[in-house]
Structure formats: C-alpha cells, structure tokens
Image (tube, rainbow, N blue to C red; front, side, top):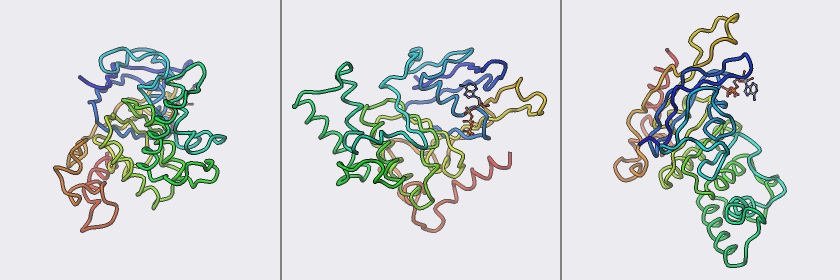
Length: 280
Ligand SMILES: Nc1ncnc2c1ncn2[C@@H]1O[C@H](COP(=O)(O)OP(=O)(O)OP(=O)(O)O)[C@@H](O)[C@H]1O
C-alpha cells in the first residue's frame, strides 16, 4: 500500500486553478523531491499533504485512509525558515512537540515523563550534531544549525511523513552538503516517507528516490489563470536509493549523496539525470 495516494487532485483559489489532475502514489519510505517553476503550486501541494489546505477536487489518502483535515503528529513539516521558536532554548524547541502531544491541554509533564522526553530530545540533538547547544536560543545558532534543530523538532513527534519546504534553500553550499548527508542519514535510519519541495535540481537528485516535476502544460499568459500545473515528469533516481540499504548494500562510492567529498566523480549519476530533466 502507498504511504500517500493522491488521486486526481485539483486546487483552485477563487478563479485561479493552481493544480489540476494530480495523481501520485508515494511508496512508504520513499523520498520524493518535488520540483517546478516558481508559482506552479509546489507549496500548495505540500500544504494539502499537511492538511492545511483541502483539495478542491479529488482526494488524498494516507496509508489508505482519507487524510485528516487538520495537521497531526503523523505529518511533520520543516520550512525554509522560521520553523523553530525563537523564545525557546534548543532543548525546549525539541521537547515542546512531545510535551503537547502527551499532555495537550497543559503542555506540562510530570518529572519522570519530562526526563524521558529530555533524554529522547538529547539523543536527537546528538543525531543532528547539536549536542552541547541545549541551552542556547535559536538566535545564537547559524542558519545550518537552526535547520538541524528544525529537523530534530519535527522528528521528535515521530511523524510517518516528513514534509520539507525548501528546507536547505537559505543555506550556503558547504553547509548544504553537510546537511544533505544528515538528511539522508535521518531518512535512512527512521521510518520516514519524505516529500521535499526544492528549486535545486541537483539537491533533488542528491536526496530523492524519485524526482517529480510540476509544470503548466499550457502556459499562454492569457490562459494562465485558467489552467493549473500538473505532473510533467516522474523520474526514479538512478542508481536506486533504498531506505535502510544505503550503507549495507552499496558502497559509499556508489552513492554520491552519501559522500560530499569527491572521489572520481561522485556527482556524475545525479548530473546525468539532472541534465535529462533540464533538456525536457
Ligand atoms: N491561500 C492562498 N490564496 C490564494 N492564492 C494562493 C494561496 N496559496 C497559494 N496561492 C497561489 O497559488 C499559486 C501557487 O503558489 P505556491 O506557493 O504553491 O507555488 P510554488 O510552486 O510553491 O512557488 P515558489 O516556488 O515560488 O515557492 C500562486 O499563484 C499563489 O499566489
């Protein structure tokens, strides 16, 4: 069964058709990178997956069940910026999701439960390389560290689906490489299906198991409002990248995304697919 099944979904805002005829089955534990020109509706699709927007037509199923209308713990999201709470420390930013999940009305926990959650949060902070920064506030962290924190915060709620809206878009190149490796490791080690919006095709091929492009097929300016974007390309990434098997079945050399440092030409596979998409 697909983790997510999008069936003939349309989205209109007033007279504007943003998305039309979107049908997509997303397998559990896959990592779908969603690309497309600015304004074609990528974020709108992500917000429908989150439950913040409802399709105008069609339906979205999560593990075979209609998507609940409200965002819930099954789905976590990380935005390009501002995902973390500036007035909470690093540790509090990670524990708060779990506090509200377990004690929704008070948002406070008794000592034993709090200790368990803090220990879980510490483990996640270590996993994202933020150990030692627990008492800092986000303003004291670099952009890359803030996005690591946002990932830890989202993962603390153990979502089945992680939605990423250009999460690394504001980071500079060197930091992006590091966080790409982290992202792949988190995806590999957790029971996660990921849908990521990105403007960066090489990032899409570096991280995704599949790259899905949205595009308006008819793009005459006078018709712009009357037609939505739909899926124009759906490319599996080659060689296949399979969750849980990144380390065991394939060498690091086989998977450029696992290793930012150059071997012979670690990005060759990604670039080939990238060019294929750009040519179309
Ligand atoms: N709540 C809303 N009300 C009205 N129009 C909206 C709303 N949300 C999005 N839109 C419109 O839908 C279109 C698609 O927006 P969306 O943000 O999904 O595009 P995008 O592909 O993510 O763009 P970008 O790559 O620039 O972030 C835009 O024309 C936008 O103005």
